[in-house]
Length: 174
Image (cartoon, rainbow, N blue to C red; front, side):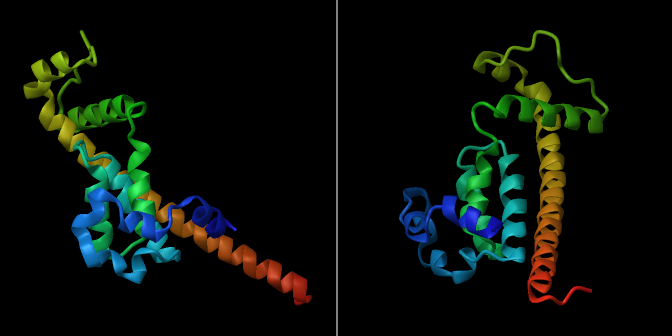
């Protein structure tokens, strides 16, 4: 059932192959493993997509697509999960990543006169870039690892549940 729900809302492979930003990958997009829905492919795609969501660069989707192609995991899921960091969620996610980086580096996070404007960001960039990037890396790795493990466990639990239901239907109760 979850597999059918995911497939229902994912764009088909023809649409993704024709996307203007993904044309740089050419024939690599024809690999069948990029479109399969199995435990390895989906859990890996979640890890790639969530890790790339923490990359504070434009064109995160292209980076997620490149990684997904290299490690041969589900491309549509990898690319779509990058949108966890969208214009609404980006400020709290990246500020939290900055605070994590500042904590790890032993610095106090900037909190006074915090205004999320381009001017403020450009003025404070020399102070925040190291903890910000470190925090993004740490949060990305931890989130990707957690997503990978959770998807693998959920997939396994679903399979176990499906097998038990099948046995009950056949009358082979253990």
